[in-house]
Amino acid sequence: MNERDLLIIGGGPAGAAAAIVAARAGVRVTLFEKGPHGRDKVCGDGLTPRAVAALEELKIDLSPAHRIDGLRMIAGSKSRELAWPTTDRFPNHGAVWPRHRFDTHLVDVAIESGAEVRFETEALPELDGDRVVGVRAGGEQFRAPLTILAAGAQGAAAKMLGAERDPDEPFGLAIRAYAPTPRHAERHLEACLSLRDEHGTAVPGYGWMFPAGDGTVNIGVGALSTMKGFKKLNLNKLLDQYAAIVRDSWQLGDYLDKPRAWRLPMSCVRRHGPGWVAVGDAAGFVNPMNGEGIDYGLESGMLAVEQFLADPAAAPARYDQLVGERFDRFLRTGRRFSFLIGHPWLLRPGLRIAVGTQTAADITLAVMGNLVDDRTPGAAGKVLKLADGTLRLADPLLRRTRAAA
Image 1 (cartoon, rainbow, N blue to C red):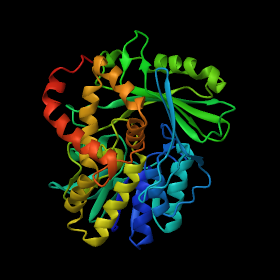
Image 2: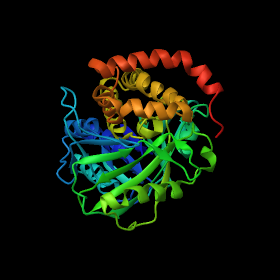
Image 3: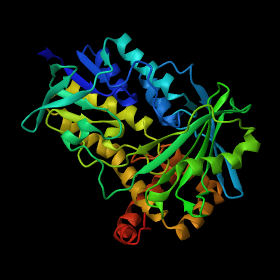
């Protein structure tokens, strides 16, 4: 039997952040990563100012990343280029950092900090009744007072613990590729909010161009499950259509690799229990309005370990309470909003409003940058509170009238 203080399943940003905090505190921590060292993760590669703030708290060197100063939002013929706001909570810049390099960097920092990392090793929870007492991995048993589930979108470990996506809630699908462009060093992300599929159906989602600063851009599209015909949506065609729109303005070359798609979980039935907690994507911490979750993953991974250090026995319940206070209202509002924009006749005027005025665009920027939560002051915070109450009342009607997938 291998005794540890803390076990982590999954070596993405959430798991690596947890391992870094734990190892620096002198905790005997082992992280299990199913993939090899340096494995890739399909993603848009964008880091919001909120993610940068979390990385700075972890004292991560961001020099390998490409700095991003703002967001260019496009809706139909309307375009607005906005700088990330300066606040007392988050820096006024984000970044693009391809995930195969970003994740490797974080895991390497965890190892340098003293964490044990076992690559190419799938770990599954070991249960004693309803309590997680450790994991089985690589033919061995490991025991610890707390196990952190950080295995991304819900898989075998999540099913064992009931940490699965709520089937009544929306989710997203996205696809990305890399392509060469002379505009690779631009300091703004670009998001096209007015997408249509090959049948002309408005798509609740967006297309993105995230310049990586290495000669390439991460080009992708994402869509929410609340749209009409979602089950028949051809992501490859949608990506090609978007690429045709931006090809001339970005002088875009051919894809450098085969486009790869992935699912975006946006809910979780159960995110803690005796002896365990779920963090990041495994807990459904993905913004329904932009598909972003790296910042939430970093924050939740750090928060889980902080609660473990304070009181191991009370950590799961305390973590769930604190992470709920920090994220739940905004993510719940986002899920309800996704049902709203699943109606094309509401999506179109909504997009016009989103970029129609400077005030509206600033609020849209805050939402797209994951800069809104229960502690957000000003107009964006007030809009969140108003939207939460309004959409709560409208939610039953929105669900009953949702477009056929």
